[in-house]
Length: 482
Image 1 (spheres, rainbow, N blue to C red):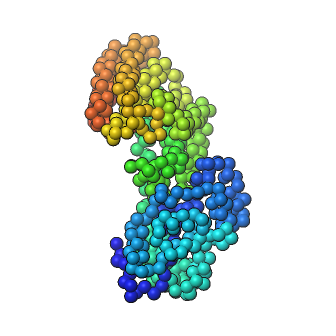
Image 2: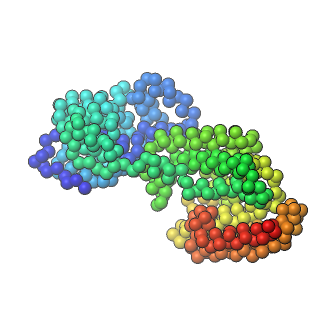
Image 3: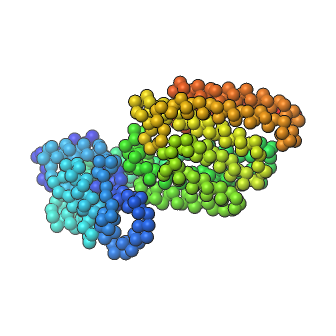
């Protein structure tokens, strides 16, 4: 950390930017998001407010929303530096383009600043305007200024010294052309890395379920159908990532209080809120366009997936049992989407099998969450309807559902659909003990505390599951008689 300035060197005040400098986020976007969550139709007023200027827009948003300064992600390293400067006798000013009322809340919360200057509804205190105000107050080269973006270059031109915080690697070189550069604090995380992480690509393998109808119908070698399934996979990935961004926006404050979720891009401030607000509709639109070109049926399935996922995030996840049935249903919806995209005939046994096996996995997920809550001596899961007393019931329901899935498979071996596809259909019964082992092992690992929150993601990383899968494929190949 840069050392504090010696008292003998303190001749000018240190003026500090707020958005992206003291805090990792932007108060305008924070307050706009709160407004949209409270009153979504307020978005229709934003363009009219903007016509009267950015300062007017910020004032109207501040009129209708509020911020909680205790939940905002701060640049702790820089704030520690400011505390040292304050202790050394340096005069500190918070100077921001955010509305004065919101800036005052942050200033009071931190208790570091001698004065807070913000936009007042008429003047947007940004860039050149900020430089003018500071020159009028302290004179040319009469102040030091800490900022984080190229918008601050007009201020640094008129400042004695530039302090650079949480900026791009190229910004210090640009600032050196206009002012003496003082301490440079760490660069911001890669935007694209934060954006990619927010899309949750590790969940995309779940969408491989759309290929299952082709595999079970022995038509995976047909390239036109394979391409349609691939496009369906991409559409589900795009839409799912859009839903993740939307959920992160809706759960922003809750995530910031969560032990692990507070590190997510939007919650931590590593990803700007505007990116989430622009990203989720863009991703959903892209997925919808792909679905439109596949079939009306697949578009309807994808739309239902979005509605069910959104309903789950808003309300249904708080209803006991309804929540796990929704999770199981989302996997089955992907299976139905595979049928609609490829136009492969529906298989009754496959749909019933999927409902039972995915219900079992959804119950595993809830079991793990309840078990963790119990270990932490909490009565239930925050934001869920389950309680610690449900643990045994969830375990019983989940194991039973998994075994019923295997029973459905066993009863279907002699069906007409299977006999047509396999020369030795009875050999398929060998899959049953493999699946019984896999279901039993999954629940045993959950009981031992070795299962992560998402059993699907765990399965995709589990060597034991891959062994069961390879043996199952071998049995299917032998059953075909080829």
